[in-house]
Length: 519
Figure (tube, rainbow, N blue to C red):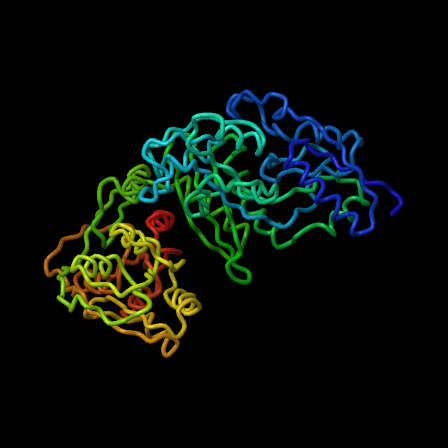
């Protein structure tokens, strides 16, 4: 271990953190280490946006040249900055752990609006030079004004303070690693579902000369194989799509079960295009990459029926229209309120399992017990609660109602919980929780099947409740070429009980998730 390892790195605050972290890890292994800071094209030409810079590797080329020339032994990069092809003679031999891969919105207090998606006021000015972020945020909020912003992380935060931007978008990884004081802003932590991150965001790449056996061995001790496995899928899709850091391509992969990976993609050709979104799983990584790219390239000219009434400006309608889909949207149920005593029984929580339960509960103006807390099975239901001026203290994540029930038990054990529900509710959450909570059911509405409806044969059927699925198949047969989607596990079980087993389950009940799986 007498050889001194020379690390090559950019000189920004975040790059220095990355180099220092790697240096410390190597010293723990007993190696002698030095750091050499190198200016790149992206550092020198910082007044131009990425789309105006020529070529690829804006933040890596000069470092790679020194690695080839032997003046450094190890290049430490933000993995997301690396082109998908290595220069001759170089190889990425390993990667670090993954920091939070999400993007965060830093919002000035006077631009914060809790009633708007993304918590941004109408017409807010958002700073970012990322085509990927622009494309996805404009799809969610077409009223936003996207304005270019370059500079390292501290510089961009400073620009938010000193200019007329209302908000900026930054990677959570950089903000976490630099431990910046963000207390003067509202920090809206975007999930991958809302803004799919850049491939390998939050991960460090360790690049060496491919004939340097010593460094190949060293990097082997730094490599995180689990992260590397997911990164390979993300960058494999990026390479197949021909993308670089200046193109609006988001790809995020995670291992969801032993041997099974899930991937979220948002893909557009230019920043002001509506991005294609997709969610897919597979137990074979190579096949997953191929399937994703094939689905993106052959999307369009499909028809979808969803058992929900939609507004024309809903994200679901707008997204599928951009893909060239024909959308038929109609609930197959009639809904009618059932009157209840407005003086509610004492309870610690009110748990809503649907948007309908929210509306029929609050529309009857119940007298709420003091200090009551609200829980929602998912984000769409939580948003419905918010429309009535209340916040939810618990929001379930994911499509599996059983898992949501267990998550709720962690915060509501031995509490009295009121469940506003339809007369024919399956009471899934109550059954799962059993005696863990003290459940009280409040019938607030009933639904009955619509007798007469006419739905054209569609390529994709998306069922948003068991009753809707049951009513559809009361009239129409199961066709072999139709893709059947269940909004959650409760609807999936209803399909199985009808003898229908060839279906997929949306990973969430969120409207974006329903778009992701329509391919």
